[in-house]
Image (cartoon, rainbow, N blue to C red; front, side, top):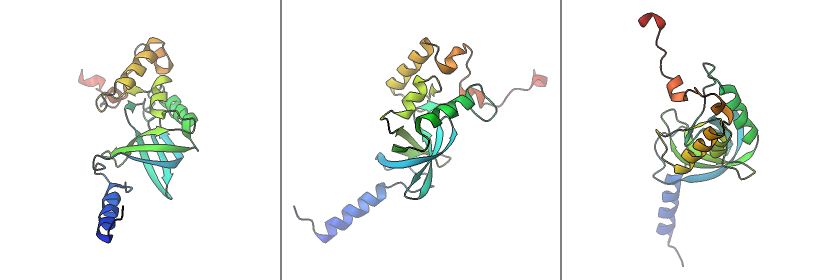
Length: 175
């Protein structure tokens, strides 16, 4: 099949519109973009930075929410360490979905051992399935299994979800 110059130009412009640009906040035109990048920084249990084409890109792991490091939520530091152990310094595959309001790319990350890092964090009891933004039944099942076997943060029967931890604290004087 032979393409004319106009067809090639249209194809190139279409492909270019699908590429993720750092700092861009719009969805990816309903396309999922997959690329390889090196993990250069772990911010907390569900956020990292990768280097892609000499540009740092903040990644927020899709489907999960981890205990907060800020404010010293129990297991916050352990969740960060678990994510680091899974992928820091590695070349990973990033399957980008869209950008969030903080200009982080929401993505699924696959490490060099072919593990889906997002799922591994739940399996290790270091994350909740973030049902507000994910209806994926696999993540729900992984959380059920981790809870059942009291893995990681599920050792604490009163583990508080990060979205509850982030809510403003009620002051004792207001009661």
